[in-house]
Image 1 (cartoon, helix red, strand yellow):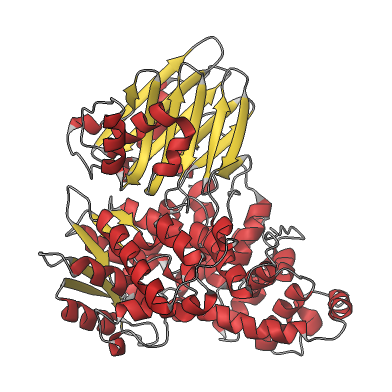
Image 2 (cartoon, rainbow, N blue to C red; image 1 turned 90 degrees about the vertical axis):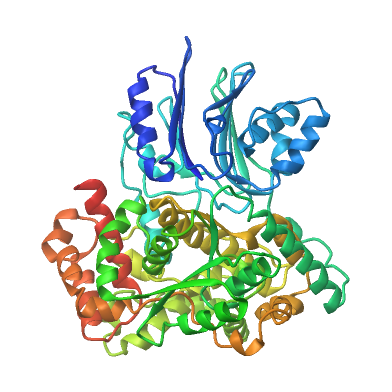
Length: 622
């Protein structure tokens, strides 16, 4: 795992010192080595920078930027099937100087061009400069495990693994994107391709950029989309056949991700996904693998005892740590530095702690992320399917929606309604006017409804519409929405930043595209509630160890913010500070604080606001 940086400057104002400064902001992603390439001609300057975390081929042969003939490469990630691709290339006459996947990617591109990306199994964000064609290519993996940001304005193009790598460029304009802020308030994250800064974007998963430098023409091209596989004819398999085929694909995917020249472990929560990853890795492993768990004294959030029992059953080397308020206090001030966009998922705290724990023993860790989105695991899917039945039965629904829109939004207009029912009313009102299941599902999970967002942001509101997938089952529409939004822009961002903060490589074996493509073509009945995964898992672990209500990876953050961490609310949501910033409506924030501190509102609004305020302080006032 590494960090990549690059630029194209048509004004020729960028120096090699700027390139080095941009690159070194990513030191935490690659503390083992650094490298730079600077190109200058009459039309533009081009720079490539790289920070290396050595996982495969620890020698200097893996140094980047890596060059071959007219091609130069900077690369972040892992292509797990590189040995098989290497053999194909050797048949074509290519020789190799290293044992790294980096050299395989470079020579695969030389052999097959942009089509080479279809051969890669893994997680990656990489850029290739072709000096002969005068083109810059930037690729991001199919799911979005590895991040890639870019900025384009006034003849300047910047890209990097994190936003913080773009900011040091003297021509980068750090201007707050209030429409993206509206998205953040709604969901606790910012949906790609948007970012918190204007003129700055995330490269969408499954896409690449082709930048013709001579003609100054930039194209964004999609090369993979999970929707294509959901639209295919479903596989005609019995339950037993589907389980057997899936188990073989899982084992292959998991074993590929054990390829490493450094120690490897797993995050073990005690849930189905992480237990399955651990069980299938341990079953043929002669050495007991290391597993890591975070627990809580509050039993509402604690699954550590389940994880411990599973670890004992599988015979892993298990380590656990119980998260305290003091632990949280040590992590929270670091979050704005780890996440260079505001990020409202409080499970970043235990994820950061378990990453620290793992780094003490291993350099690579595998997780179970992606199982819920691929195999219909979230309870919210079935719950919303029931709500959808109710909503669709409302007579003259469009008329009722129009009528509700005429009712004034301000909170005081509904003072007589309890806060609990008022929030439910706002969510119902926000989804009534939609026909698209994915839109309705996403809005039903919003932190701030569109009415809340308009009030607190003085009328600013931005809504991203989901593609219409009515031909698919309603559960599949929700799964795709989460796959492209919550998974890509929340979960994977969370894991990437906290693992990279401690120079730990995170791998997500359930997100191998061969698994995802197979799962998408299974009938929904096989996937519902992760039935097929449960049937495979019970071959290795007794069902009583994993069959229970899903808890998620949450923490008692609201309780802490009313108690020992209340000073953070007082400090960052201070009335004077809110007024001076002129971003939020101070009266709205005052009321939110009052409701929160008197236990009348227990949702995620205060934490979401707090994380923005801490991010803003770090990035605009720091």
